[in-house]
Length: 501
Ligand SMILES: Cc1cc2nc3c(=O)[nH]c(=O)nc-3n(C[C@H](O)[C@H](O)[C@H](O)COP(=O)(O)OP(=O)(O)OC[C@H]3O[C@@H](n4cnc5c(N)ncnc54)[C@H](O)[C@@H]3O)c2cc1C
Image (cartoon, rainbow, N blue to C red; front, side, top):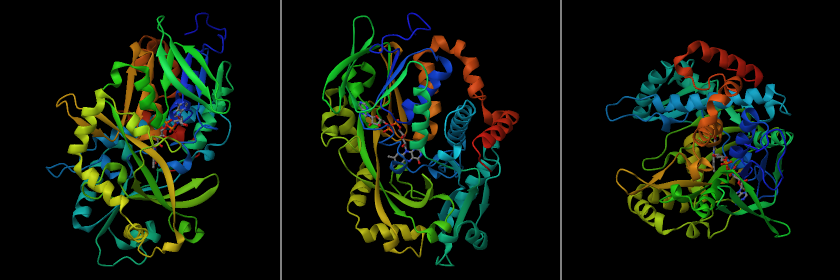
């Protein structure tokens, strides 16, 4: 993109500006290193360090989402069937992430794969006759898919006790319980991965990472470039940087910045912040009896991100269990945000969407109010559905990151709808893009950033394809339809990332 390729342009005028130092910007910086290593890139992070918000290991659940255990990707249809399509898509996307992370390891990214990814079995867990019937149907639908080969099912109490000793101890023997297990699951420390990717990028000529630098404004100049106003968090000084391409990877801070950029594509979008809390134990005895990530079913009317799960976490060498999430409400869009974030995001062009959601999402409203009114003992009671013998004193509440759920105008009805996935916004003829939303999130960062490259730089993709295919062998192909490639990719990533299963 430099007018004079091979030379590093003036540092005040980088080819690319990445706003925010989370997993999305880190992934895009790494991908640019693959396809256009000569480009200069400046990353601006408002916090004192990168990966301090949603990507920090303690601010998310660290699940390598591959649809191995998350039941919300395989709902039962009105005809009683389970469609595996969504689960296959999510799994393919996680395989793309695995391939790219393997590539980065092979190319000499510092640190060991163990610093950011560890094998942890993924299980789904249901109770009751209906739950068991659903689980059997889901298992049959998924086990037929090559990506889910090896998915095990049981409703045998003895086998369940072997798989889930902590969850089965003290359970009513008359209760119907069923589970599936995928030993190929993972726990991912996205904070550690973000730091490794950004350290690696910063080692390249022309890439700089600036912390304590808040992007205040984005304005299009008459020559088509973006004028980025950056404020130093320590001195308060402001300066401007000019660039041809901006990625707003600011997590919860993306919506306000895209609104400030004034691109028409953001009209109608709003954000609804939901904070997440987890019960946490570091008791070696409890951790020793639960070596898995176990996802249950969301309560009726509850949103997909509220699915209860009990997770083994491996963070910086320490093992712990997290149970949750419990939802909380805060009008902040970032943990370190302002209580005015939500009211300030209201615009004439998104008021209709926001009011529409307030009217239609009554189940969500009821769910959130119910969550907010919960006492400590109510929360403990929810935990005992998973761990019948749980003792309150073993578990502490920890506050995770803020999720800003996307609110958008439904093009069909014109009404506001709440969306639980992510939304890539591309504007200014492909010169600016931003990512809204949180789910499936960090696990699919590589696919999200590949889509960004394809939408913002369509003319360059043919020239970039060989490099992308070298880094991600399945790029542009479907693993679920190519068993030989799937086997090759699996074996290679398992070896490089030191995974089993
Ligand atoms: C409770 C919870 C559980 C989750 N669990 C999982 C999970 O198990 N698996 C999974 O894959 N995903 C999970 N996610 C989602 C995942 O954490 C996010 O999708 C992902 O971390 C988002 O990365 P990001 O880079 O977009 O945002 P962030 O990591 O939030 O990074 C954005 C960065 O931008 C900075 N910033 C903001 N505004 C500005 C500005 N104006 N100028 C400069 N910098 C700015 C912020 O300080 C921050 O560092 C979870 C999220 C939450 C909240």
